[in-house]
Length: 319
Image 1 (spheres, rainbow, N blue to C red):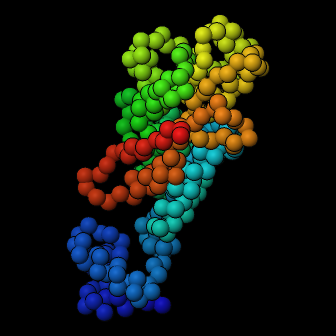
Image 2: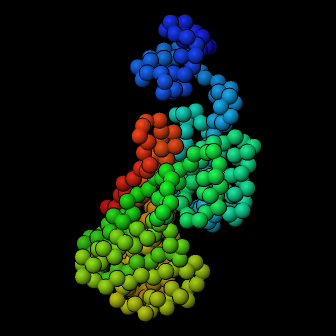
Image 3: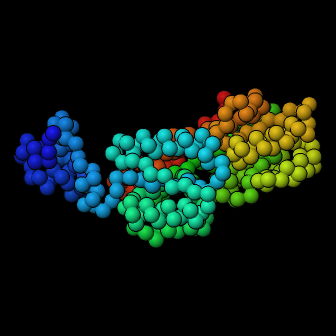
């Protein structure tokens, strides 16, 4: 197996120059780095990542942190994110290490252990919450992190997201122009997350342009009576823009139980439900989670200057 010394001898360079080039040291010219990497590949050089990372006091692993949410396990949106992340990590000879828990305290302890014991220095959070203890921990430690979802107003860190204002507007536009819905309501959660605020802004913009009265409904987690009451008090509703697929499905099922002979069109987000749970009246905006995962890794490992602060991934409206 070829060594750094073999590469240095072939190119007539010092061992230290070859080592820096292989590690993308900015002091080495782009031309030399490219040449060294090409020769290394031709000679079948395999770097010792454990040794390199031991020297840097960094594990060749990226911590991927899940939100505390009972929908995570069966949500294929997160599977798409992980696929994109893993694809990019494999290309960089890094592995994926997961932090998940049934409470914020469990996740926080997991992340603390990753930093202190496993020497993980890079993290991707699959969420972005305001005043989140895990994010506060990462901000206080000498680590890098990226969130899926933009920070709340007044906060700054690297993030990947969709243009959720346009995604919200496109959901309304799809209902009114493609499916001929006259009175779409907006079904949100009670969490007030940044992406919800943006999608609601898109909904409100389109309703104003259409000279229609907006109706916004915060859907409770476990209170079917409240959902039933809202449906009965809004007989004009013939469409729903829901903050995500699960919220949309909840409202849709309650509506069909109360009014089995009426049709209603629903647009959700994340494209995260199996086909057997929906029918031709349920539609979902695809947020392209694979590309979001890939983009998160690219942000985390970016070397160009000036460095990007965020990447916006396009969404795909239903056909």
